[in-house]
Every structure is written in structure tokens, then in C-alpha cells.
Length: 324
Image 1 (cartoon, rainbow, N blue to C red):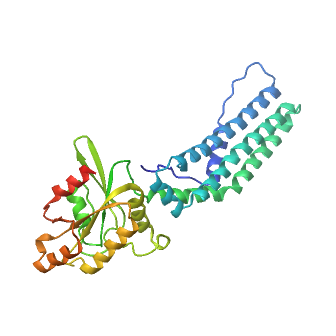
Image 2 (image 1 turned 90 degrees about the horizontal axis):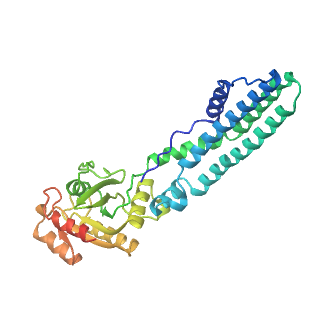
Image 3 (image 1 turned 180 degrees about the vertical axis):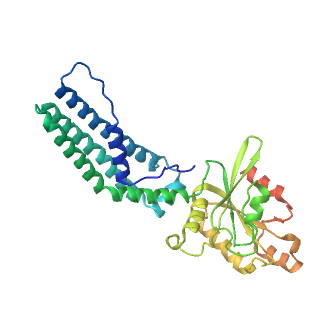
């Protein structure tokens, strides 16, 4: 799922676009006197302006996601990053402008129909155009705010509605390598921490079923409200999208974090997501010694030994995924 909200221009852009459309309006003469012809022409120009502006505004409104149909992951992510109530407030302003524009246009069309003086027509139209400009100038800040919200949407991960599994653990323990081995993903892999600066997604196919695997960065060592945006995405992905977590441990500590630090993080994640099944993956078995194995066995009764780099025992992970 993604949000395809097109660029939102400033209010002047939409007003000028509607005015230009109206000025190009061609009306066929159908045996009317000049006054009636011009009254009809001016009225139709007003309708053209109103219809174009209403269509542009309605298109903006329709592009924004409806909270009632949002995936809980996106709903909470948007609410924390942007604010669902703020979005609603600014869209409400746009909806009100449609109503005001309809009333304004109807009133000035009535003025056209009632006048008997052909010389009054240009003045009525000029006042109408001025009123439209003034109305839209007042809500220019709403267009700007909504476009900033649109830009935030572009930073959100493209999550699909599929059975989902999350990879968790300290930086450089092998999450991205494992993702690349399990799926056709191309997550960046470097030998330093904080390589994963976003949620990396990969997809595993088995017969007719497709599975989504998410590489989640973050330490999960602070309250949600103090997390950065990527950590929040990781937290919400685990909270809302998956029932099973693969927690990766590097017993060699070559990741830059001790075995004890990693064990403490595991305990935090287990406590934080106590409704999830957690599968412990002991990575880099090709670099382990007997002492490391003793440490692992003392902390984790159930685990799967793997080598993400060499592709060892990945079939066991796939079995866990397929069994759900």
C-alpha cells in the first residue's frame, strides 16, 4: 500500500488555471440579443471557474487516505508523523471552500440574470473574480500544509497486505544480509552500524503464497514518543503487521555489540511485544567457537543456528515462515 498524492500547488495556481479555462470558453449564438447573449456567456464562465476549482479541490481531498479504511500501521504512523486530526482540519477547510464557491457563483449568476444594463456586466464579473481570489488567498496556507504532508507520505514504506515477518536485532548482526538471501531484495550491507536507515522490504514466494519480510532497524531502548521516525516505523511494523519476529543474535560480537547487550535487547523486545512469537536466529555460526556456543545455549533454549552470509540453514527459516 502506498499514497499517491500528487503535488499540491499554491492557491493562485488553481485560480489562474480556472480563470484561463473560462476565458477560452466559446459560446454559440442562438438567436439571442446581445444583452442576453453576454449574460449567458458570463454566467457560463462563472460556472466554468466554479467547476474547475471544485474539481481540483475535490481531487486533492480524494487523494488523501481515509482513516476509516487505513491499515492500523499507516493510521498510527500518519497520526504520529503528521496528525490525522490536522489532516482532517485542513481538508475540512477545502470542503467548506467548495460550499462557499457554489453559493458565491449562484449569487453572481443571479446578479447577471437580473441586470438590464449591458454596461453592468463587466463590473459584476470583476467583483466576482476578486471575491474568488480573496477566498482562495485566505486558504493558501492550507494548500501549503497539505503539500508538506504529501511529501511526508513519500517517505513512508510501501507496505503490502501480505503475511508479514520482521527481522530484529542490533545493527550489523546480519539482518540485511539475511533479507537479501531469503528474498530478491537488495538491502544495503556494510560492516558498520546504522546502515539500515529505513525499513527494507523483501518478498518470498512459495507456491501461490507470497510473504513479506521486513528488516527493522532500531534498539527499542526508549519510549515510543522519543524514537526517531525510522525507529517508530520499525516499532509499528512489528506491532501491527506481524505475529512472528526473527530476532538475530551475533554471538561473535563482531557486530560491535556484546552478546550480553544483544541478550538484553532480546529481553526488551520480548517484553515490548509479548503477544508475538519470537524465533531466535544465531547468526555467523561459521565464526563461532565452543565458548560462544555455551553462552548461547545458556541463554536460549530454542534457537536456529544459521550463517546468513553462507546461506546455511535458511531452509529452516523458510519453514517457520511458511508454517506461520
